[in-house]
Image 1 (cartoon, rainbow, N blue to C red):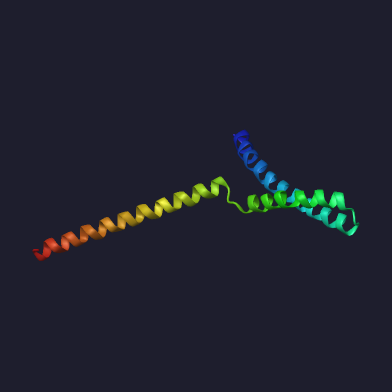
Image 2 (cartoon, rainbow, N blue to C red; image 1 turned 135 degrees about the horizontal axis):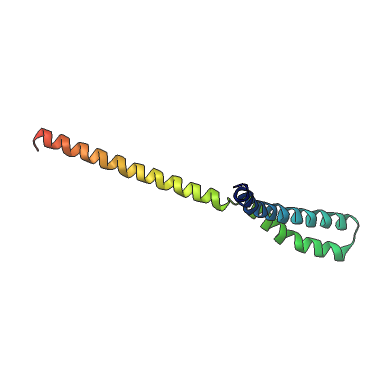
Length: 105
């Protein structure tokens, strides 16, 4: 049974590591671009600056995105709310029909 739980945690950690890894690589590119700029090394600066924006941008976007489990929970919660609203509407409709019937209309 402990094998299943360890497999479940192993499935989640690579995605988190990927998100953090991409963000760390982007920050490293930005830091190296800053250092190369201060040292007046134009060729390495251009390369680091060129790599900073796509890597750091993708890392920030990836880091801020919700995981699949979070999205599944949000969708399930919204479906539960919709079902409850439909149930409430049907109860109100049934009560209105009973009141109309009791009033003789």
